[in-house]
Amino acid sequence: MIEIEIEPARASDRRAIETLLQANGLPTAGFELALGTAVVAHEGGRVVGCAAVEPYGSAGLLRSVCVDPGHRGSGLGRRLVERAEAVAAARGIADLFPLTETAADWFSRLGYQPDRRESAPGPLRTSPEFTGACPVSAALLSKRLSREALAR
Ligand SMILES: CC(C)(COP(=O)(O)OP(=O)(O)OC[C@H]1O[C@@H](n2cnc3c(N)ncnc32)[C@H](O)[C@@H]1OP(=O)(O)O)[C@@H](O)C(=O)NCCC(=O)NCCS
Image 1 (cartoon, protein in one colour):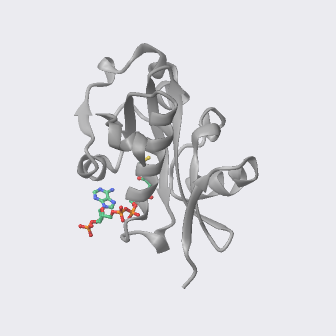
Image 2 (spheres, rainbow, N blue to C red):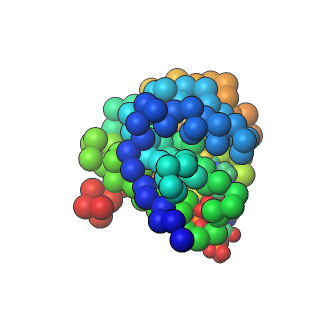
C-alpha cells in the first residue's frame, strides 16, 4: 500500500487542489489567500486531500477541507484538520472558523462549536467565502486553538 503523506502545499499543487475542490463541490474563490497555509495529502505524488487556513490576524478561516471520496473514512480528514490547526497556531492564529454547508456535524466531532456568522471577527467576514462563495445558509463554527495544536 502506498503511504499517504501530509505536507505543506507547494505552488505546484495548486491546480490539483483546485481540481479536487471543484470535483467535490467546494469553492475555489480566494484560495490563493490560503495557499501559503494549505496542507496536502499526497499518495504516490497524487493529491488526495487538502485543508487550508485563510489568515485574518489572530483569526483564520478554516477552508477547503477535502478528501478524495476513495480515501474517506480512515481519519485522513481529521489528520488534515490537525495539521492545518498546527500551521495556524504556529502563525499566531488563536481561533479557527470553518464555514460549511454539509459538514457541521463532522467539525463538531473535532472540537468545533456552532457560532453565529455575525459574531465572526470583522476582517474574516471580508473573505470571499463569506461575501459570496458560500451561501448564507452555510453554518459557521469556531474553535480556540490549544497549546497542543502548536506542539503538533
Ligand atoms: C468531510 C470530509 C473532509 C471528511 O473526510 P474523512 O477523511 O472521511 O474524515 P475522517 O475519516 O476523519 O472521519 C470520518 C468520520 O466522519 C463521518 N463523516 C464524514 N463526513 C461527514 C459529514 N459531512 N458530516 C458528519 N459526519 C461525517 C464519517 O461517517 C466517519 O464516521 P465514523 O468514524 O463514525 O465512521 C470528507 O467527507 C469530504 O471531503 N467531504 C466533502 C467536502 C466537505 O464537505 N468539506 C468540509 C467543508 S470545507
